[in-house]
Picture 1: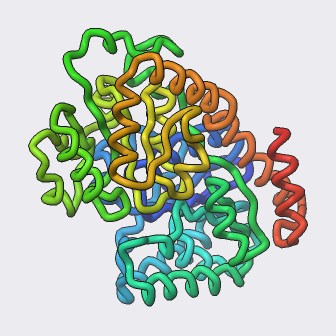
Picture 2: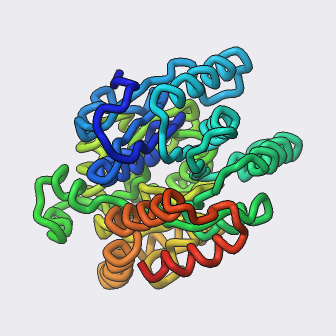
Length: 391
């Protein structure tokens, strides 16, 4: 555990992240490592099964890592109260100048813990819980009510995609948009390749492989992934990850890798040919952005986050039904089609969805807040969005 007391002069930035696994882990590592040059960064977090065992090695050594043992994904009154007390204690010890909460559980407990804090409080949902399609209408309604109530507390929501911003504005006008981004240099380093070198092994592989990345859970829609694999027995499918719904992937042409290292995730993705993401809901998936950078044709479901990035037929395919997914993958098998899609997708990463752009925009928002700009003013939404679009 890192020390709680401030260790050097400068503005102190406290990240609170309960769901530190998968794409959110990659996101928080990239953002924290970028901002450590300008802020004294503290990270209060919980470990999940998909959190890399050597996760500390991913972070810059100057970042203070503070594990909150009672931070759990499910609702647990006893552990949630303990986690709330721990966050209050951390806030008093760190005395942050900026607080940024990531994911729903951190958003609820963090806003309760810091509602009277003098520091500006920001919250990024990374995919609202009330969008879960497999949940009952009653449960989804409850999640929406919780988000609405928490939005009444003093905070500003930073959506990670345009679709997430659209879902945020009915809850609060204290909101703005900063798209997720990835770190191309880190990906190139993991793959031991030069920037922009593409996939040198693409022509050497035998057969066509479709892949996805993430936890095998309802959000990622393993049922549809399995149906697509059954419908295309001549193609290999690979799920890079693991999860509680692994038994739903029973098609004989599906390989499940289990949890592997960050480097191995990227190498397995780089060795495949087409990225498939049939999610039921998303924020803005890091795995999709990484696949775009790796120049893999992307076939995704028509949900917010996915459709905010992928323009159907231009830089990938957006699908609704099984037959559309199958047809899109068949098109992606055609080298000329795949090449055009991948070029357009790579341009989007280079111009918009990268860590340099994302970190610069976060820093701009933080500095506005520290300078006394009213992030609680409804006009902040339009003003900040316009400023950031020019950044």
